[in-house]
Length: 307
Image (tube, rainbow, N blue to C red; front, side, top):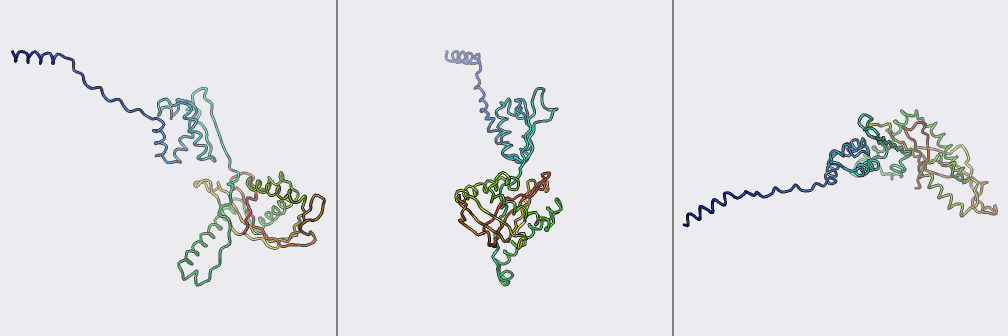
């Protein structure tokens, strides 16, 4: 009997349906994280070039990779491109790749000035001959001096090649700019100053004029020509593209030693400072800047250095 019951039990088990455990579900895919990882592992320059050709169409290249990404994602990507490299041209895909009815978007931002003085000039401390050639610190100092002189020579050579620069011609032009800026400042003409100053320098001069006008009602300024001396202290080139050396700005730091006449008046026209009948010796260090790639570029004042 026991054997019969055992056989019946086995028969019933064999006739039952076989239930296999359900296969594990694939983990949810975070498309945003996946795209972020691909963006981080790719060279930044390649990312910019690839993303710059996207459009606002959900079925674009990223839309296929992300399996239906919304247009909002693509707009955010385009914003990243603008902030990472605002001097390049950002445009949509070519006409052959854009579907009918899609609108092309083009954005080009032009840099008119770097907005800062690159490696501002400061006088180098003189060191004795024995220290320069017979000590380790002297050798380091000699190496630094040689590198700085090579930077000066390279910047001047690029400037001469692109613009036909000559020292005499530039000094005459720089002295005229120096005289014009000081004259317009004496008259308080900030609108005319905008043409010969960079944006940042113009903002600085406007603030100085506001402080001066709160103290003096008007001033008299006069330059006694010719200048006592003009010399170049530093020349630097600020490149924007390693592959194109012509896309650069040149900054020349000049020292002016001149004789000037100055007198300040209050609201009643009374002299409160200076004496225009006397000449005073003034030393100024100004930084002039010019673009090598903008058509019709000219020299502007981008900074002043106080020692």
